[in-house]
Image (tube, rainbow, N blue to C red; front, side, top):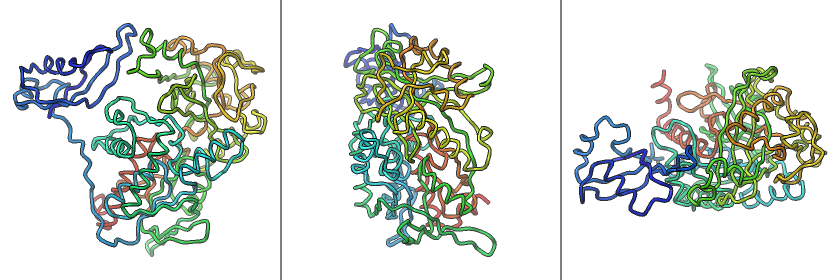
Length: 550
């Protein structure tokens, strides 16, 4: 099988255009191409008057060797990669003690799935509820301002990614094509097959709910056991005579202890009490950079026109997205990076708090992406130098601004909001305009400068006009900014070695967004797969990886 990339065709090409283009590009005669399939489809919208589709195609030809010789050295022609996933091990019958997975978000979900497929019968603990019950609690918060601290956008089956745009693309290096394994498992669980080929796949919240349920059922059939509303409150650690530390189990909030030699820590970026417990237990951790800012909303039609011109609304293009970045030079923000985060075409801004007395925003879209507004995080990069005080200081930094936002919104979980025109002019908003904010439980017009650090305010005021030069109308007066966006990524990294284990505690596998090793559904799923493989290899060959790395 050959792979041909960067095959460009008009947006409205005919049914036979791909086959004809492949034959011309490879110089194939009649009957030489036996079959083809589309591996990837994207688009090039740099010229709005001539938007093109860009294909990567896998082609089966009669004489592959001669075609490869004829195109030797060409970057766009070569053998198709082997993308099949192969398990690294198989558990012996009755393997014990069973590995534990803490957290049922994307990383924990795929760690559990791969362990189950290898026969390890994992135990999965999650502090929150099953996804259907969690969804009811989350919608209850949005509609009635009733927050359940253990069942919300951050906590429960499916993790924070359940209430998002369901984006399934990433910029991680993936030489083993583990991302393909993630997508294939999602398709098996009910996702549309197009996610295997489109360049920017997404699913949306409603589909994610049923998919998560399907994957849980598959794990349980393979011997895995889920225990929801079971918060892990301690890691049981044995210290050897030589000072070495090894996990021996976990303790639950109900007082129960579970023996385990291998514990995957997939707790997500908002498990603040768990981070504190891990710190108390001496688990190595470091403060890491993250970002803070707001959600910004524009009419989706404005973004579509700016990105696609006359082709706005074309069914193959869908709702337009954007990706923006700016490096600041103005006083008070020199060197700060400002960038769009988690852009949600045709979506809504959602309440994502997990603690009483704080306001947190995030973005969400359904598969259709047909809501009135586009929204994205507009966030400013920060480093531990901005919040000195040790590994947990970033949590307190987040909490401080979330509480300021809660107060600015009126103390009811309404969020502080401001028209972009007012923000740039440095005046508080007293009313909002033509762009109706989508955040529920509601917004309070105010001055967002009261609930953001001064450097973030200065950076955003410099960056927004820069972004308007790329997307005309981006600084329209009535565009709405809603605060605050603080949970862009974990403020903590839990360092691990080449075997995937904590650098100072054997048997503990920090994984996914919460440990600082992922940023989104796809990368978290890939990291979960790697964690499961590391558990399998370390469990079946104790010390082998350690010795190999010594």
